[in-house]
Length: 59
Image (cartoon, rainbow, N blue to C red; front, side, top):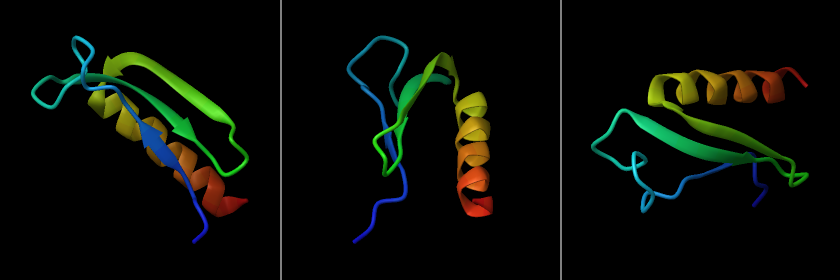
């Protein structure tokens, strides 16, 4: 199976779990390029993730 993207987050860190509106993630692509999104709102993270998906679809 071919990997498209992996989104990794550490829910054990403060302000990064399921019951809070913020998170910090790392987006990893098949070339192992990593995009770090520092602590921000989950809405902002979702938007940036969708941007990344859209860019991959266009490529």
